[in-house]
Length: 392
Image 1 (cartoon, one colour):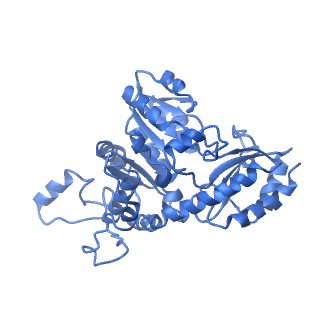
Image 2 (cartoon, helix red, strand yellow):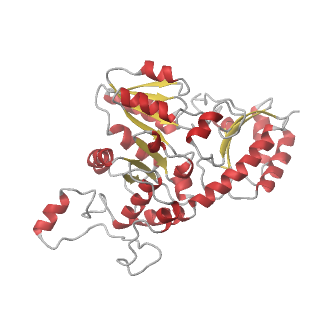
Image 3 (cartoon, helix red, strand yellow):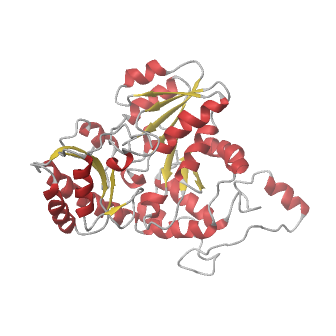
């Protein structure tokens, strides 16, 4: 693990080498696919370690390298890779540590495309996954087999916001020789740093808080140099799910305001969660950083906060009532994803009655909320008027 650097230095200075790049305050976008060599011997030397040297932008690029350094430092990791999407990062991390006949232990209720990877894709190559209740440490232990290679976590989970005890899970993984990895997108590295708790790989959909402007799709993996080099030399270089230098520069720009954005989202979420907690038309609020949450002690141990992502179970007699509530909202957009400036709702009722009969296993009266950067008073007023269509 690297020595933690102060946040301001990471976000505003680390890796930028301004004297080298024309004293530019903002890092340059090195929009070059290729890099030349002054001699055959220079090419011979650099190509032996393509992750550390500049040969071809599919492997490394100066702008992307600045971003990698910042992300690794934020996660208190030794190194990082960036990918064309969050699921590209998840897939690369998983595929790098399995082979035919391998077994994965994963917590339930992970991101839907991660579930597809485990359930639909990997079995084609003889890789099985056992899903367990991540709150039950004994269930995790009991699911491990001799052929298990990965313990996959997501804490908090993205719809029900359940936690896993990261310290305990890391100990289990080390005891059994497993690679532990976590989707850390919900908290951002500002509010949770799993590597400091012993987890091997921390993965993000950088589309979310890390970028924060709803204009770039990106994923990242942070971890030890040994693990990152292994992923680079296998899945990263072979599959080629890379980001452009321009997108890397946009995410560097997003990082400048990351602490401010997640704090605003967190502070507003606390007020809105409190509003929901006392509203008679609400059955349950799933938000791990509220003192009423059954895992609040664990949340306090391993998180410094939870930005504005939570779900609410409403009193409703029908899907039609839920749709009416959603349609009355004026300040929330109906959308997937999250982490930008705009507040969003994702109603589970949209995934009931879909063609093919593949309804969501989640209740139709559950709604996931993302609280953006609007004033919380305005959002609460909007929610209150929209809930007038729900039964008392």
